[in-house]
Image (cartoon, rainbow over all chains, first blue to last red; front, side, top):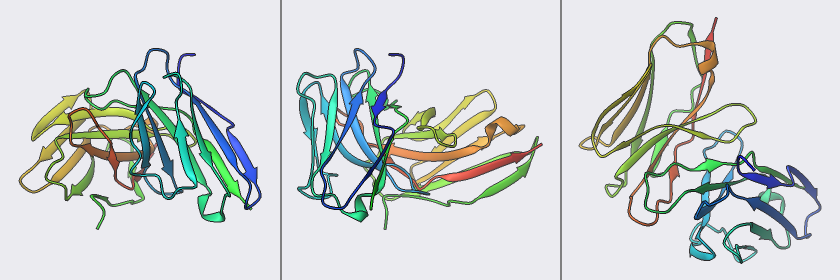
Length: 115
Length: 112
């Protein structure tokens, strides 16, 4: 596709359920980032991959959050045993290569609501 | 204290006005400074980036960085209603891991 694609766009789940959010980056982009954006806030870093290798996961809030990118393309962010405080917009971004100027191409996000 | 601080506004100006948006940062290791624009219900998109201190101009937009005071600015000349959006400043250290740290964003409305 032409841009970063995320699915689902909207997810409503009950507390305690697991959710998986998917990101399909721009074809050929080496680096993939996950951010979380609360309403009225800037995006907050969660984790980042170069190819299939997770380079930095320092932003993941706790061990209920995990991410993978097994073939260096599509990535999945998984939240286990969801809590209400996990409700937010989850944004994926990709870039052509690491070490460049920092232009990230963001997707339209997956809005998660935990009831 | 957050590493990048930004006044969230909102800011409302008439069409044609000069707009000044500002951020401060605390991490001396930051080398790259960006402004992203985010329209309602959309993802952020890069507007401008600057390396280290200095000015950069692109059409009606000018980005300024003063590393001595840790101050980041974006100026918009002859503002247009289509400039109405949230403007996010962001910084990173460079190198192989450019984990962006964003400000809170400033909501700008340009009234026709």
